[in-house]
Image (cartoon, rainbow, N blue to C red):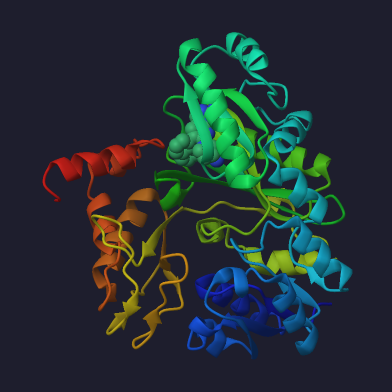
Length: 452
Ligand code: MV4
């Protein structure tokens, strides 16, 4: 059994993992940069180690510093959280080579899903529906033309090493294809050191729906329903909900079963998320995330399960102690990501927090490392809190969300709380009638109205 976990992360997710450890009687080790010496994750841990200067590449991304910290504290496992080293297959491999358990999937599965071409092939071979597109890499313009004619325009050229929206180019016709192909290849080479690209039919107005799974080492796999993550700006999610307002229960059961069967075939272990675009009643695989995700709490709210606890149990070699039939989806949950940003321009707003008051009450959860007197450092991601609300149905959830956003006080810095207050009064949002482009169009219209 795991006795001491080093948490290779910071902020709210480090706290989240520590809380699971404490409930399980596991010691926790925080690591931190010099910029985070006063962070809540350092205060709440059983032990902490400073691993370097503020720049992430010299601290939270330094495999040497993190492995040294694990070694001197005698940690027998590492949880990577999300971002940073969480989807770095070489890191997962190094951790295991040091005789330390990596709380996540195998390095091979991380590598397989990290390359979007091999990920798509694996998904398709396991029975997951994919976006019609090229059979693997598109190596030159002649092949690009051949595939585009087969798929039909518009087409999307994507980088194998991309993901999360980086390195994509649309071509609406053959006239645009040559330049789009060249630009995509060159950008992929420059950004990732890997110029491999592939091609898909471009879906016009899909929703972004992702299915959560948990798998153990004995081949037991359960799906925990889906999350709708369509509300995004520049590929940053702003608000997520579960269940998706777009699905009915038979669609939900069917995609869940398809994903769980595929993940079992892949021999995957730990928590994972299979991402889809959903348009006109059809699901199309785009990527698989081999980590715990920011928005996991909405799934926790609806299922009552503790995903971090399950990840730790699976990493310890325990089988899942519940079956698919025992997973009950209950009610509705919404998460608002609260960023230290101007709610109109989205300019970062780090600095000292004067007054801090988190909302509470029935159905309300706040995951955050903020406290009065804390100063948000300028060196990292601007997400400073997640507000997660649960209700028996979407209407009750929205009522509680409105109430909770009214109670939330974060003084001294600008936050995106006013944006959320505004969004949840919008009729289209209230009706669940949004897709992946809705928020950006909403914000553009708001700007045209004179910043209000
Ligand atoms: C697409 C697409 C339309 N058609 N693929 C962007 C992030 C990356 N994970 C996949 N992305 C997209 N892939 C096809 N064939 C549109 C997007 C996309 C998107 C997807 C999910 C959430 C937000 C998005 C915003 C713009 C584009």
